[in-house]
Length: 157
Image (cartoon, rainbow, N blue to C red; front, top):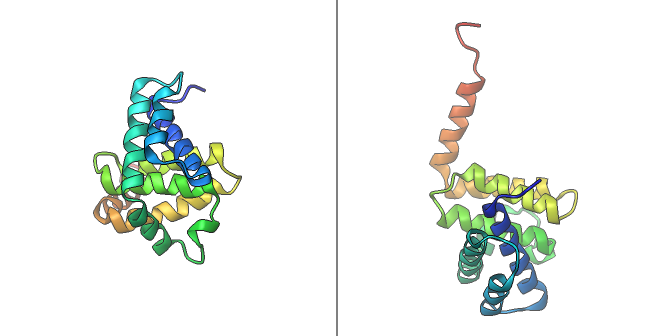
């Protein structure tokens, strides 16, 4: 199945941040790596660059948000894939208000499932749901009400 340029951009960003985590590569080198990657469309590379820069610039604040909701989890003990999927999605939840929170979470789950362990999708989902409730409270509440309305029986039934 062909992945969208936006999914591909998120995957490139996660791979770059994974490399940063394990090899201690600096952000400038990560951006050079993204730019030299063959295959992905420019739209994917542009998103990856934006996400990597944003995460690197706000890493401490993102990690604090993750730690706040990750009960009994030390962020350094999380798998590098899960940790960086969380960082990317947390950054998007905070900085990209133009993207619905459900889209951000769903994308992060799919990337985590593709590159992480069997449990990665559920783990990432749980942490990001809690962060979304903190960062996008009114959007989450509106979404929950809409879901209830969509499931409610109609008078016509």
